[in-house]
Length: 487
Ligand SMILES: [Zn+2]
Image (cartoon, rainbow, N blue to C red):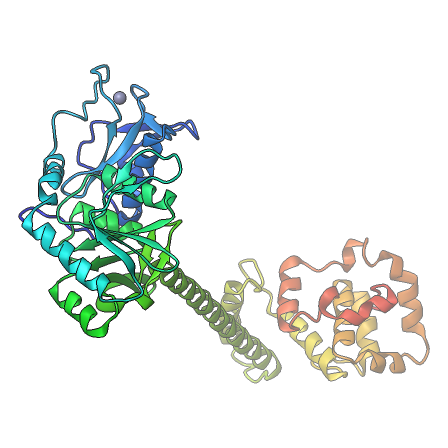
């Protein structure tokens, strides 16, 4: 029992410290692959299945990977310490990488399989399986050690420890006492698959923290279910008149944002077991479906969490901007501290710094408070539909003023009047029609003449203060008059 290393199926696989073959060539992609990095990309459970797959491919002459040095097909091997490396399919001394010197410890243990086959322990478990299956009247033709010949031109024959039939299925039970060659496990699986029969490996005992290579080969290729027959399960079968068997399986559970395994041990009756002949799986619990479902759940929760975080950040940003906008309006409109001129400018610079950090402050070493105040007044005016902070009687007078003194603000003024629904006030005030005439005359120059264009930083500040109303696209109704909002 000494020296067994058992790996968490979800842990990352590892290569041996110094693999003889350190690079392999993929015949599919033509790429050279670093063995240590390659192995590390798989979780242990996947590496075990990959090892089985590569072995099958090599056996059927469908090579995927070859030694990068000599081009001989290779397959993945697992050491007794459950670390992986590649081995040549055959070795004739022409490659400097030597992977087949004598027998490994695992090989030797595997060879003991044949001796074990007829051991007392083996016979005892076989009898327990026989008792268990015979207890259930749904099983017929229950026999031991009967030769099973391949039915359709396939070579070979097998002699399962126990075989039986249900009305829909042929079953072979194999008692698994000691380490078996992977070859043996794989070729039996293929044999029964082609016979359209199910192979059930039966162990005398199992513990998840002490798993041999063969246990992992059987467990992981069987959707993480493994079966035990012992005296207590045989007695339970006879008592119930139903085939009962002990199932150990992995059970995925969510731990934070990942999946971890729990191990479940339970007595199951035959009705709880699902057989898939094509996949050669016999299971009481569908580990892979459950794991996939939990992964999906984790993914959805992650997405929902990110969306909530984004929304909260967005809300916080809007709240901060509203507060800053209010601050700027209060600062300009509630002008009370005339006499402390320098203090007021300092306060403005502090507010402008905050505006700058939101991407909408005025640039330059001495940001112009008068300019900024004018923008605040213009927004307040357009909103109120009457002059705020301007020494004029009404909106149309401000319009004329802008035409002569601040043509760069003219378009934005028009957009805001429209957006805030106060343009009709200006229209009523233009009794002489002088304003309409002026606009008509200048209309073709609004977009081309540079004097109607605001400085970029002022434009951004005005857009911030007016919450976008100063910009052309702030209001959808504008298309009706071809974008001539200033008119
Ligand atoms: Zn080689």
